[in-house]
Image 1 (spheres, helix red, strand yellow):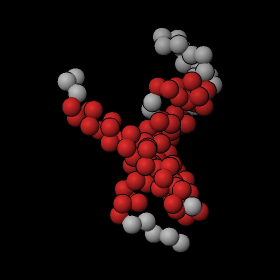
Image 2: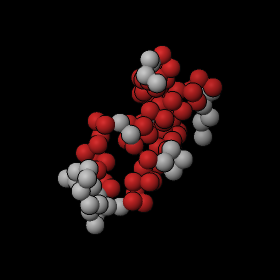
Image 3: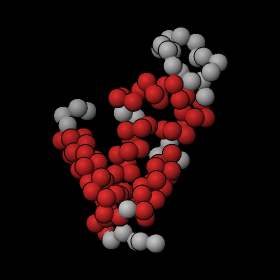
Length: 109
């Protein structure tokens, strides 16, 4: 079993966060996420559909819940292919830093 050094750990942690955020919060995946939680085709202001799975919505948007499994996948990938996983993690980690810097420098209050 490989243990990542501090740099690899940082890349894996930032990539895990970015992956979780992409799956749980980013608008680009709103449609698949709506389908997953049973809100496909639902519009705001309408009654909540019977197919709505509140537990799934809570699980997917919880960084401690779903984030654990996202991190577990990154850890498993690192165990199977350390170099390749770190190479794939780097752009996601950089993207996380860009988001953090943008939120700090944003004029929105």
